[in-house]
Length: 195
Image 1: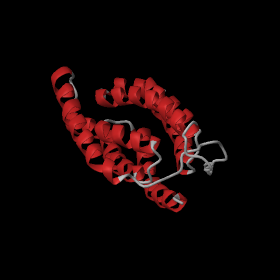
Image 2: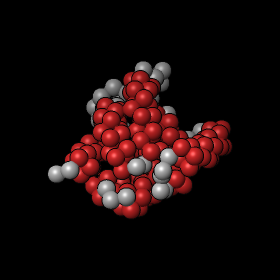
Image 3: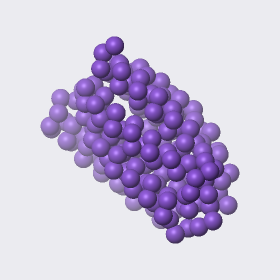
Image 4: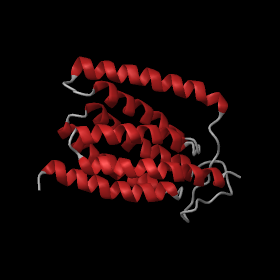
């Protein structure tokens, strides 16, 4: 088995674990959220998905932030359904954060696209930059425990599924196909968790 295929399969397995933990709103999703992008860095670099490679670095750092945000939040009285500590409750995306989040996603998309076109040999700079930019915002929304983070991930998942099929990494495409379906159910579940 070649390295690309092995990393693709390993990322798929860790991705399934992550997905289960995120669906349950378990704080332990952040551990899987650190391991998965560490594996993905090698996969994306080898596949020539440079923005996704950079995103994987961001995911590792964001996993640390997310764990701290959930573990040590000042909001109290809300244990997650995974049975572990996590003081931050699930809430709706604050209206005051919507425009700044959209502006950040757009600016990130343009900036990442420019970097890919200028400094790499990326064959898919628009899609790679788009999924990376929206993922940055979606991961921030996950760390805030906004239910609507699932809607952002839904868009990312659909685009990534198509992108990864075109790049010849089918297991990664499959996990994003599963993410697409789970995003719908996860959003519905998290809405029910809002007090």
